[in-house]
Image (cartoon, rainbow, N blue to C red; front, side):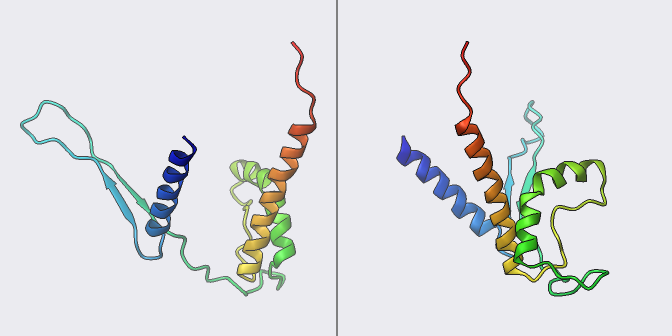
Length: 131
């Protein structure tokens, strides 16, 4: 069973890797029945693309600041809260577009990982419920 899960995850990861290369996309379509058939199944398409180039990398914001690795860690750490606030206020964004590139991205992912580690520690320390 574990081997099957690993194979499915690897196939999914490989498909996502190929489908998310810049400038390419995967299109998944369902067959639309012929006009002579009685069933009416609408077709649909799913297109997967990689994000585009950020034209604001290494350019300062209104105050001339560029986000680095530490601001990436902080923004990743507070990302669950900023996600909730962005649903209420569209001016709130999770990700700083005025960043220095790869180091900010690493910091952002590290901050998100810290959130999951902290949540895991709190869940494991909580005593089980006694019914």
